[in-house]
Image (cartoon, rainbow, N blue to C red; front, side):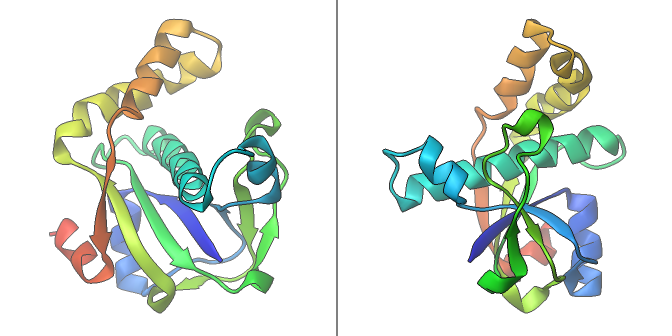
Amino acid sequence: MRVYLPSTLTLLAGVHAAKEIGPAPLSAHAVTPALREWYAGGDLEELEYAALSAAARASLRLLAADPAAPRRRVVIAAEMPDDQVGWAPGGLDGDDRALVALSAAVPWKRIASGHVDDEDAAADVAAAADALPAADAGDEDARFTVDGAEGNDLLWYATQELPHLLA
């Protein structure tokens, strides 16, 4: 099953050095039954994009927790055996329909690709990370700022390209 793991460039450097994402259990995002039900009209490509977007939102939370990390969202896509992917309860307020739990570490060889903000998105991403606490508290202006980061598409990187992002 394809899963999307939220990350940062700082965390990606650790993944590259360790040659795995772990230890388990790990939170990830995937096309779940709840996501399929919610997005009933979507084809598989649209559902995968929705799961990737959920992981990108989780990456933004990681950035908010690590002010030293470069302000670019990172999502790592991996192929995991179905028996290592469990359906997780819906996350924050029960609305994360794509949330799954991985019962095993993700070896580097299972990573299919990386998805990373362009450097030009750094200002939007930084503003969104800073606005998260206020957005969570219900501030509509802060929510607008957080949503602004989603206006930036993540760029696709093959696994052999990921180390170049860390240089």
